Image (cartoon, rainbow, N blue to C red; front, side, top):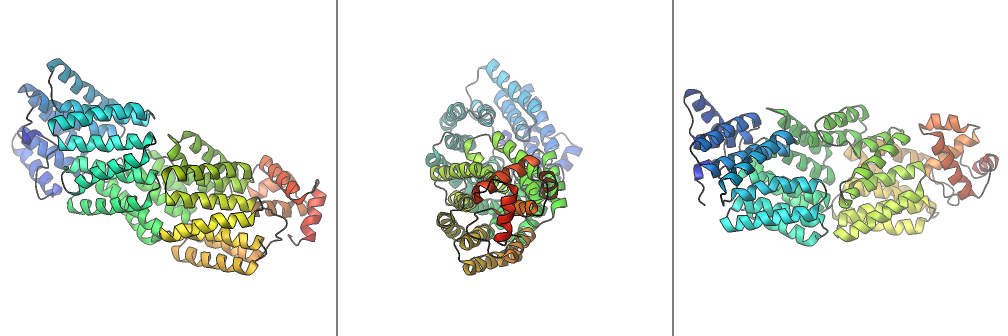
Length: 545
């Protein structure tokens, strides 16, 4: 079935891609006369790309009704799809679902064999993906691909194949799914796909790479998205999301000042002229940078704003609570985030913070289990980044268990990968644990060198909390390598030796009495003692006071 080009929203209406100029020109014309269907489609297209979502919807509604009046059913259904799709993407399920239902009813009543059937399959498949039914989604997207092939519809094929690739990843077919994403992206970069579906595919592909901890591929496609966005003058929705991804890349590479600027620019772009769906993601990125720089009050406010715009505050908020010393709140938050992870690969984004929090709480066994799960996922995904994360987690856990040589084996691998990936902050974090492990093996001089090198990186980045932490470790000097206590356990032991009750220790360290009791149990076990008096004697004898 032929679709009249002037009515097809998947065809770019102008070659210049100056969407602001197109919007201004057609908006002015619409005040002077009634626009025809082709002009309404062009105005709707430009309105969406400059962030005027409601204006886009109104124009498409007018075009939809006019097509129905003229008996142009397929074109009317195409308009209905492009009304519904953006609504569904920003969470307006009632309106979006209503338009999809209306479009499907019209096609069913007319019994038309047309490409629009394929477009209408996409939202249902995405909904099933969100529910975790990747097999069901695969079947739907595969059907949409076949319809696109039969009608030779480039944009439908690109959308459906991209969704099919993500379904394959969800089913565990990582290599084949990623290969399909790359194949689709080649066509997008070559300009074969028109701007609205191209923007959707760009952003979805970058997100998929981030979920898979495929940092190299994420950075490559982010660069391509940046170049594409720059070429679309006046672009708002994808340009803002592109800035968020660029901020994440800059943060990873150690350019925190530039990352801040990009994230703030993203918030500004996505806040005007109307609130865009990616605003919550931009606010979360700003909050993360506040937290890393020690600006805890600003981070608290910005995590709250991100939540208001639909983006989860975890695991960042849990790590903020850890930094604030609110260990029980951090533990509750990170456990909730782990339970709510939609599928096991997304658990990996929560497991590393979970390890940090459990080690701080003295729950070494749970930290080890989480580290081992990270290592297993790293093997499944063949991700160097995730392998480094798992190595850091297992190294820190082994150190807490008192096995410094084994910890160093894990940490050497992690540091080498971070260096290869050009991730200075993550490498410095691993070097801190290397320094502590060196101390525990009786090599305090090398330990100090590692800690000092890490501190220099933290200082350059502006990671104030990490600088303070390393300064504390450097002042503390080399602990007795025989006692095998974590830094938190040493704190508890000192307070016990000072005559503090469990209640007083809990108040001073901002933890619960239950957590204090757990620390004491670990301390008694590691020191081979059975009473507070005996542990106090050990603390004085070994210079831990």
